[in-house]
Every structure is written in structure tokens, then in C-alpha cells.
Length: 279
Length: 162
Ligand SMILES: [Zn+2]
Image (cartoon, rainbow over all chains, first blue to last red; front, top):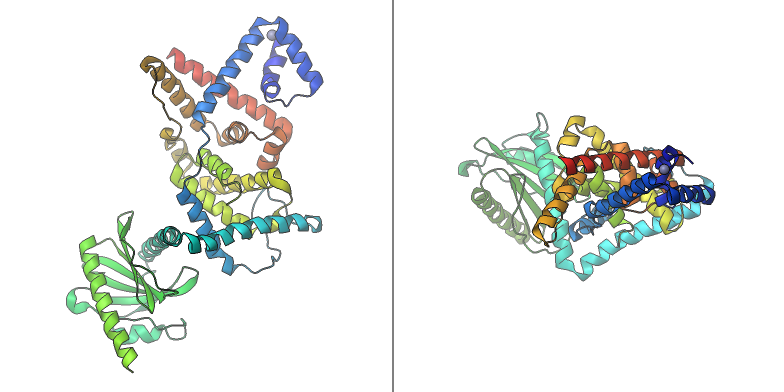
């Protein structure tokens, strides 16, 4: 074996990927060639250095929770058991009949992963619920930012709550509370349908000077605690729930202003839900 | 327990070059795995890891295509790779120097070379497994690994002399 032969094989040799006869030849050459031994020593040094550069790092718990929540959110949208779907993934082979048992095995681990997400909400409720709400906060901001693109703000453009509220009839399985705060500097601009937390929701759009405030409302699943405000890319997000509705509010106006606005919404909501209860 | 999350995360970090994008890629990859589990052929832990890494790799590839190519090399986050533990100061400095050189060179490798070296060094995949993930023959894996190491070695030597 020549020097170049050894140099091209040294990596496979050190990786233990050389067939035994080839490995024996490399070893024989190394035993009598100082130049190739130096080459090997350099490669060993490189490998050691690479280990320092690529430390094995455990993924953050936040990522774990985030992925679980994403899986849990997706599960209801999937039909079970699996039906064949067109694969858009290069490199992942199309299913065959022979692959069926293996497929079920994979399904099991994914189902397991997702069921852990559900269990997690039960067992360390607060932590998981908080992580879930952080994921939702991301969705809320993303939707708000998307809506700011031309033509996406509202499906129904009206400053009249008596136009906006009925517009949702038949489009949602609930009637969202719609208020106008024009007199207090937050005119109603309109509303649109959105999709959040795995369900269709109402998005109400309010103006504040040249800024836009989005309010997402949907029926509360279960009592929740009020969450602390979070900020994503300069957008503040407020969240609270009444016995009836889950509220998410976001805008790029100041946090104090947004909290004021949140206070108005709460007050208006409690006034109308009181009225509903009396009826 | 999410299977292979550590491996998925490790690969995604090196293919995207930063933690935030890596997290996005990992989440997307698991959702793809969930939606497309019909495509799964392998059985057993090693094969399902290869399958998951294939999806991570292809998801990162889609991610990369969505971005401007010139931004990719420039934005590589070297702080990802530099972790230092105090010791003798001069020695530490020299080591950190070569580590940064190497991290930089790794981030600058073309994606087809970077992915094979990461799969090998970080995950310890066999050439056969790497070939399955990247979808190339074993011979190609071997030559890409060799070229990747040659470039890293050259960068390391240049850094020492400079
Ligand atoms: Zn030689």
C-alpha cells in the first residue's frame, strides 16, 4: 500500500470501517512508515479536538415540552389509524405492506410521546400548562403579525359591534363577546376567523392610534390561572380566562397601555356575562 | 420521553448553526414524523434513530432552502461550540483559539460535508447508517468524511501558524 492509499483510508481505518484485510495492510504500512504515522497522529489530534467542539448537550427541557405540546396539539387533527398519505419527504421511503408492523411500532412511540404530554399536564400541571401557554403565546403573536400584512387584518370590517358579532354566527360554535371602546381610544376595527389551540377562534381587531391590538377569544376548556404577560419580538401578550372564555391579547403598544385595555375588556366581559346570567 | 430528541437536537444545531432555528427544525421534524410515520421502514432503536435523523436532516434542508444561502455561512453562531473550563491560562487560551478555529471551520463546511461529520462525530453513526440518512452510497460517505476531515485539519494547521 502506498502513502496516498493509506492517507485516503486512514479515516475509515480509525472509524473501524475498513474490511479486515485492508485494515491489516494499513497497519503494516503504518508500522514501517513514519510519514503516515505522523498523518495518523494528526488525525487523532483532530478527532480529539472535534470532541471538544461538538460537546454532547442534552436538549433543554423547554424544547422537550415544546415538542410534546406540538405533538399533543396535532393529534386530534390526525385520523387514526393511519391512512396512507402522500409523502413529501425526500429520503423517506414510501410505505409497503411489509413495513406495516414496523410502522405500528413507530406509531406507538409517537403516541407514547404524545400521551406523556397529556400525563404531564396532569402531573406537573403548572409547569406544563405554563409551557403550553408559552407555545400559545407564540401562536398568538405569529397570527397577529400575519394579520398585519395587507388584506389580512379583518374578514369583516366594521366599527359596529352589532355588525361584527353576528358575522361570527354560523362560523363558530360560540358567540364571541364584542365590544367597542372607541370612546376610550380603542375603536373596534373588525374581526376575523383564526385557528388556534387546535380549534377555530374569534379574532377581534382594535385600533390604538396607529397601532393594532388583536384579541383572540374562544371558550375556556377548564379554569386556568391568569398568566404573567410575556413579550415576543416586541409584542406583549396578555392572557386570562373567565369561566366562559379564554382571552389572548397582543399588540406592540406599551405594556401599561395594553394592560389598561385588558382591564376594559375584563370589565366589559364581566358586565355582559352578569347580564347573561340574569336572563 | 421523546425518542431520539438528543440526537435530533444535536444534528439540528449543527445543520442550522444556532439554537433558535434548531428548536424550530426539531419541532417541525417531530411533527413530520408524526404525520408521515407511514413511511417508516426500520425497526429497533438504531433504525428508528436513523429514521428520525433522516427527517431532521431533510427538515433542516428545507429550512436552509428558505433562507438566503449567503446568510447561512455568515450567521453561523460560533458561541455554540465554545465551552471553556478554566485551567492554566496560556494553555486555555491556546486551546480556546484552536477550538474557535475548528468551530468556525466546521460551520463553514459545505452542508454535505458538515452533515456527515456531525452524524459520525456527534452520533457515532456507522457509514452504512450515515448513507441511509443522507441517501448516498457508503463509498460517498467515506470520501465525504475524508474530505471534511482534510478541510478541518487544514484549518486547524493554518490557525496554529497564523
Ligand atoms: Zn506512508
